[in-house]
Length: 231
Image 1 (tube, one colour):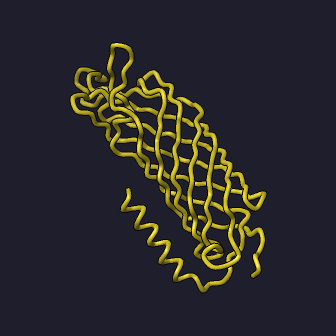
Image 2: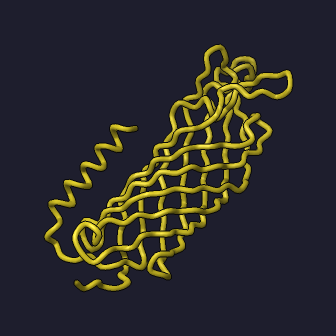
């Protein structure tokens, strides 16, 4: 993850040098962003409930992919609101000594209401392209879980296991900070880092919350400008 972040920062710096002579950047009012999300779960692989110790479903997934699309509207120079849609997919469950959730999978789709606080763009030099920001928000999460239980068969000769599935909804919240670097009037690169907490409630597993740290990187498409800064 450190190597990925270093590569992205160097890429932004290089692109910024190439694009420095393209003129003064306008302050934007509306933007749409697309991000790939690298997600790391925080939690134990084993859940203790009284005298029982049970495998966690989510904390033993080895393959997590996520992406998001977000729209922001800046109604003040340093404050905006946004709406985000994110999907996280969980695959490849693995825990030494257990096959309880083997070949299981889950998807969490989140609709997020975002409050954005940003530094805005300066009038010249790198401050006219570099912007710091912080997001806080609440999410409405829809969680699909699909378990494959190998001991159950459709009939005596079937070779495929039957499946168990559930679909639940809940609320969560997050906080994150980030930086964007504007390349052209209509395009910026963005990196953000944050923490998200999602409530879980399913009869198919014992996880009751999901805590993740997320590193996102992507592109911001600047749709409408707010004003021009003059030197």
